Image (cartoon, rainbow, N blue to C red; front, side, top):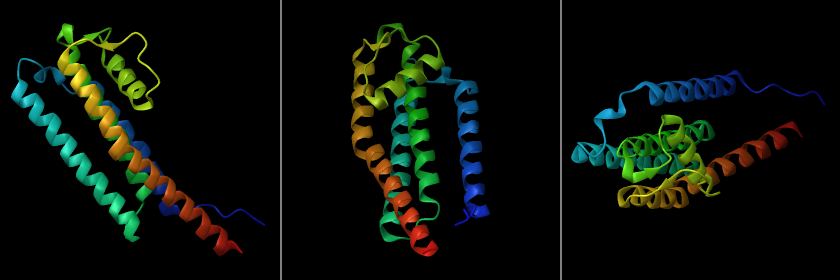
Length: 173
């Protein structure tokens, strides 16, 4: 049997994801996050909560679309939404890290991104630890968010991939 290449739209969707992730990382490493932090707590918490609410809504909408069978490119979107969640938490940790008592060992944006990924994987913290109460609160929120939304998104993406593979196998036979 010859292998059929994926349809061009699949390739375009994955290229879009790669480009969107690259833009997300460029924005994360270049946008001025100094506006946020303990000097502007209302702005900081409003932006953080607003971003999480919007992200949660988008994630739930995509999950519901997969369950109903109406979602287009659900895996690409869910992977992007997981990367967006990672970026939101990393930006929050970086803003908190500017206030030294909140984190021990968090100095750069790369440190914040590393800490976010380690927290998402729940493998331990190593040399960066949340020292302040606000930092600990955000870590607890992230772990809860991981268990509820990101686990659901990853499970739904897995289900969509499995369904697509099964359809392609049936179609090939």
